[in-house]
Image (cartoon, rainbow, N blue to C red; front, side, top):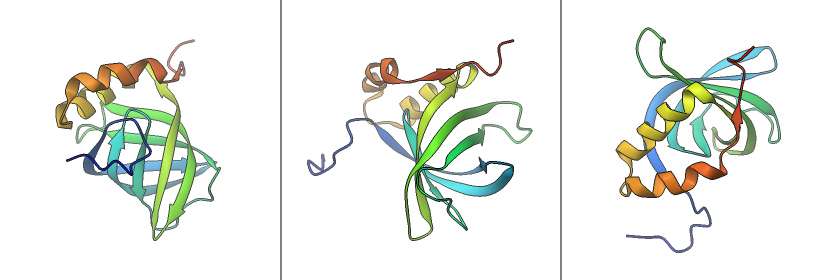
Length: 126
């Protein structure tokens, strides 16, 4: 069922897993509530201020060898949750993010249409 009052045009999936959110030199553990190709909703003990630039890191395995990493900004916070918008997704993370969202989405083909609007970052390159 589609909620036509929803203003976002991108696919979001439930994804309840721990993440690290780094704002400046402070890292906090948070819980990812939902995830999209464009951002995430996080449960954070002390949410940062809206507009804050931050770093999102989601480990995909117990060893932390595979990660989804992205630069982001806090869009809004309320009731212990904050929404972050990805402003630059690591190139290595792009495939992991796409696969995770597509695998959990109702319409996996929609995800490929959302990818051209992403910003990538090149932190892993010299």
